[in-house]
Length: 162
Image 1 (cartoon, rainbow, N blue to C red):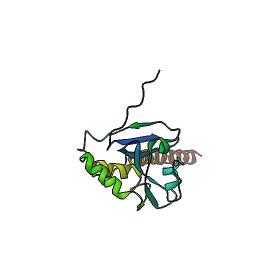
Image 2: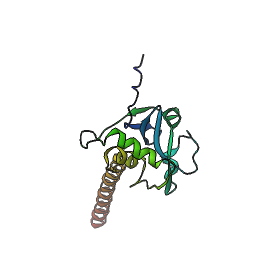
Image 3: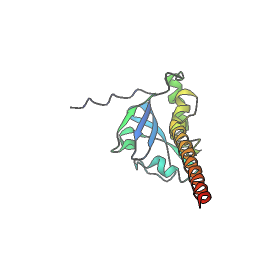
Image 4: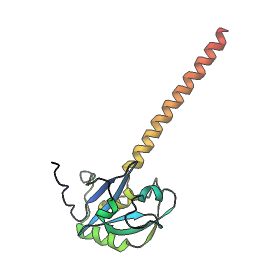
């Protein structure tokens, strides 16, 4: 039997495991989270970050964690507590609640749901998902460039022998 998921504490970052990405929310108590959702999204539709990628705006929503997660697994992940001091819990919740209902700028690379919750908890907007994708793309780019260079060298060598 699996251990039950521990109840999040107000101010905790919630990482929701969507099929192709991670969605992030901040727990504000009584079963509710504050998170970014596309302007057209209905409560609990579950496509928050993917749909937001298609627009440059998002709405700050307060919804039940149960509804936001849908059938997806989630966990408390205050992963930067070792690097940054979390703001006081009351300040995190106050800032989150004040933003509910507002339309905010959304950019997949610089102002996404992970940036949003890290800004609320630590006062520092950052997204490891974006960093990891950029690093992977850079590594892939270097690899493709190396393969291309080897191909050019091989074809030149082949022509010289003819």
